[in-house]
Image (cartoon, rainbow, N blue to C red; front, side, top):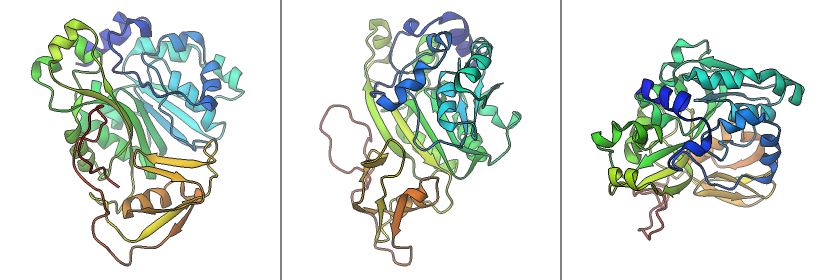
Length: 345
């Protein structure tokens, strides 16, 4: 499958318009404050980016960031502007043709930004231990619709866990299915290149994340994918695919369920560009200044990460009140159809 992907993205695709589906495309409206970042990126880098949207968590100034499957470097150069001269962004990709584009314009971007804080490595995201990357050295790791292309997803998550600092975050978008994808779909080179053949069954992803040391994967946003190409639609049949953004925190002590310790947080409104509210995930939209009850895991995610200075914390872990209300195990994605309630806290 490595050869299939290298051929598809290195030689068969020449621009984003060559894609046959929007599976690798995040349709979330790009915030206004992010648009100037893309305007400062070289046109060739932008044209060789196969998708849309920008996988970009807040509060990145001074952070050391790793982009898995960086391609031509569009996201690296956008994140580099947010990390600033005190931060660093490292891009990893297995497709040399894409990396040549990224490297060719490194000095162009250094001149545009007035600093050079990026580098690019040729390698495989399931073999991160073979690259010159120090364990526990990254504040944030991102990936934009790439993990589904990997034939060894457990190795990817294990590598991420190894490279994140304590309190670090893996923030990434990918494609998931509502069931396990059959062999015929997985082996179709076009479906694989279009990010559908390698899509994980969402519940299998959660299991892999737990096994890698991320017991509480947080869903940030999602949307159903429509396969409009008639030939591809016939091949996938009744499988429903979803594009989803998750965040995983490397924090000791996280539990595999949302437990209630009577805790709460208050957001100070101090994260840049987020004065009125802070959205941790799909079920935690925290209004500035308001006491917001949280489970023990959410309490730890905010207190033991880079977000801690922006919150006040109420309570501790001295008393347990059982399961935090509303936790369930249904399909987490919105399909446009009504489904029973049971969203996790």
